[in-house]
Amino acid sequence: IRVYKGLRSSLEARALLVETRSHLAQIIACQLLQIKGFIKSYEKRLEEASRQVEELRLLEGIKGIGLRSRVGILIYFYHYQWKDFREAQAAAGLSPATLQSGKYKFVHFRKGCIKWARDLFTELAYSTLLYQPWARLYYDRKRKEGKKHYHALRCVANIWVKILFKLWKEGTTYNHEKHFVAMTQQLVMRLVH
Image (cartoon, rainbow, N blue to C red):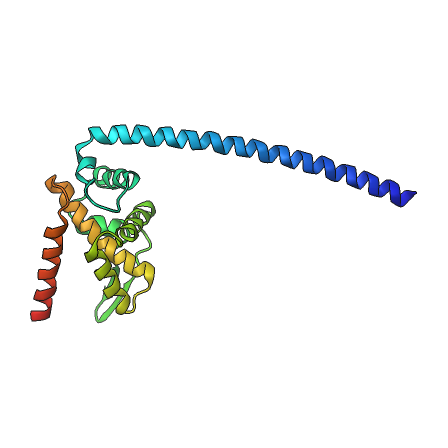
């Protein structure tokens, strides 16, 4: 009888626990649906605002770069007011850091940087591999050199920062053909020298 009573009270406690947990799961599901609605309204407002900002419209022509990325790029360049593209690359942690003293020289991954910017530009580099042939060629070249995936992406992102910085400074739109020709000329110049 003791075993039966103990088993019965254990089952009642489990039923109560299951009921409580299922109620909690329902509450969380309702909150997630509400958050999803907030995100949709935020994206709508962001899209409406992007039509009014000239700099965001200049970046629309680049395939593989979404609205959130364009806004992040604009925030990065406007908020910090970089003097040149090298400063922007270093602050985003995309260019390597060099330690040098006398004959000693050591090049390493830059850890002290603006982390969200590094993430933004590496995601941008990854998403443009499908749409920008030069990005895919450059990525493949870096992989053949023995660089790991993320390192090769940072190399592509480094070039994107240079391109986007120039577009931002000049107020011009991205021209894929012009950039592809410039990269081909640079490659030929390297091979000649």
